[in-house]
Amino acid sequence: MLELGITFDYAQLVMDNDMAKMIKKAVEGVVVNDATLAVDVIRQVGAAGEFITHEHTFKHMKTEQSQPKLIDRRMRDAWLERGGKDFAERAYEEAIYILENHKPDPLPDGVPEQIRAIIEEAEEEYGIKK
Figure (tube, helix red, strand yellow):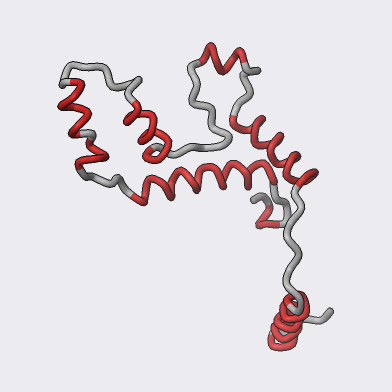
């Protein structure tokens, strides 16, 4: 937000959303049990074995690690091959896409009137003129 909320950057909102999801995932913590520790896989493959291509690793990487939409975790060469767009550039593109394509579900019947009543009550309570 800029200028005390008078100006708002939609791309910043999209970036904040991506970061908030990552923080939420981190705050959830890590489940520690035989399955997540891959005890059986370690016994099977061995302590000096290769785990990267093991099915267990693929399964748990998608659930245990945060999966941001806009932060690109690829190696630099792969990132450059795909255009080398940084976080802000991808966020602006995503914000524009959302603004052009998002179709929100309509509010249920009566909800707009309830919201209007709440606003009018607050305006009256605080002496705000329309």
